[in-house]
Image (tube, rainbow, N blue to C red; front, side, top):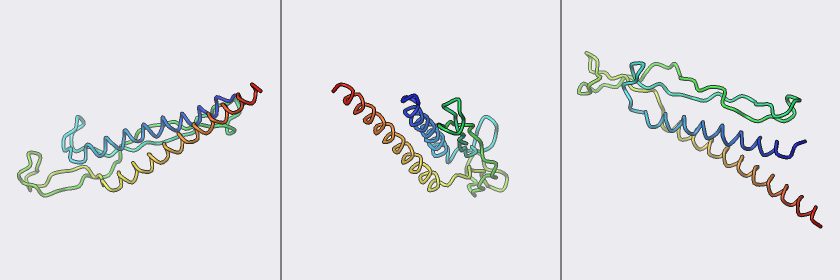
Length: 137
């Protein structure tokens, strides 16, 4: 087995979790966005992960990749705010249906997964360095 494949598994996890963090940050930044290019309020996004084979023998050693970023199809939250420029005739504004607490939990989960990938990468690197030191003797 190529020793660098183990490092590529960890690197793929770090890249995937970094993308997930970017999407979560975008959701949180747009929690009050009522206008988008598509029209209407911002729609929450989420990432879909898939496996990424790193060998000719699929299933033996696999990394992770972001398959796609999807928009949720939930209806917007209707908030009564007759003074808002985007209010309808009844005074309601269509707001993104984003739960900030849920996004924070997702962010902490992504951060912990990223942290685990970094620890795995560092442990693998230390193991390879130790192997090289043994070869010097």
